[in-house]
Length: 357
Image (cartoon, rainbow, N blue to C red; front, side, top):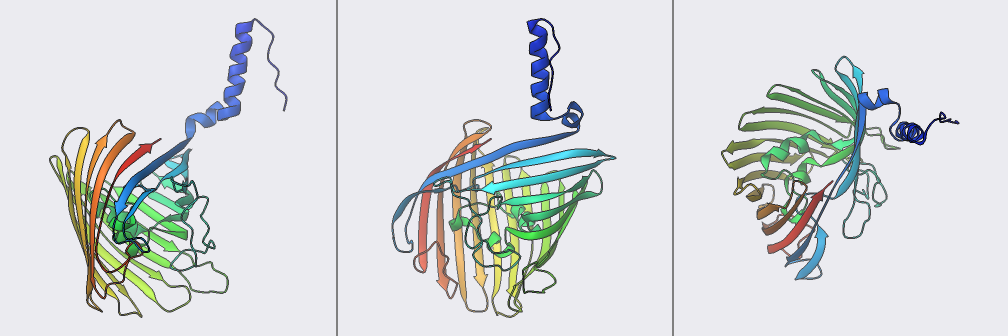
C-alpha cells in the first residue's frame, strides 16, 4: 500500500505524517474508539531464608515473590453493540530470577494437557470470549477454575504465590486447559460455572472437570461457596472439593474465614481445611496481615498447620516492598510437601519487592 502526503508547508506535512503514523500504529480511528488492548504485568521477587529444605537444611535464595507469580500479559475488548463485547486475555508466567517460562505440565491429568515439563508461552491464561452487560461473561481456553476463584475471598491477600504458604489451591487446582467458563453478576449476587473438555488422544472421558460457585458481596460482606469435581485421566479416580467462606471489612480491619472439604472417589484420602486471617490498614501506605490454615487429614491421621505474617509498604501506587515470615508443621501420616526436607517444623522469611506495570 502506498500513501501520498499532500503538498503544502512543512507544518502541514508534519501533521499529515503524524496522522498516518497514528493510523498505522493504532488502526482506524473508528476501531480505536470502540476497542482497546492493554499490556500489563507484575514482577514480584524476594530474598528468602528457610530451614528444613530437601537436600540443604538451611537455604538462602533469591526466589519468586510471596504475593504474586510474575507475569506479563495482554487483555482486550471490542464493543459489538447492544451491551455485548468481544474479550480476550493472554497471560504469560515467568520466573523473575531466571526469565524462564513457567506453568509447564509434566503429565496430562486433572484437566491439564502435558507440555513435556516445558513452560507454556501463555501458561497463566489464554482465552477468548463474549461479555454482556447483564447476561454475564462466557470464555473459552486455559483459565482459572471456579473453585480457585471462589476461595480467593477466604484469604486476606487472595491466593499467595509462595509454595510454603499455599494450601487451598493445591485442592482446587489453579487453572485447566480446554475450559468453557461462565461468570455473571447481578448487584451483590454472582454465579460461576465451568466445564473442561478432555481432548487427550486415546482417552474418551467426557470431561476432566466441572464446577459451580455462588457469591454475595454487599457493603463490608463478601461471602461465597463452591463445588467442583476433577476427574483423573487414566484411572477412575475423581477429586471432589466444596467449600464456604468469605471476608468482612470492619473499618481498617479485614477479617477472613473459610472451610474446604476435599475427598477422592477411589483413594480414602479425606481433608478438612480451615482458614482464618486478617489484614489491617495500619497507615495509608502500610498493611499488616496474618493468615493461618489447618489441614486435617482423616483417612490416615495427620495434619498440616501453616501461619504466615506480612508487613507490606507501598512506595507508590505500582511499587511496594514487604517483609514476611512463615511457619509450617507437618505431623502424623500427612504427605510431606515438596518444599520440606523432613516432617516436623519449617520456618522461613524474607524481604520482597513487587512492581506492577
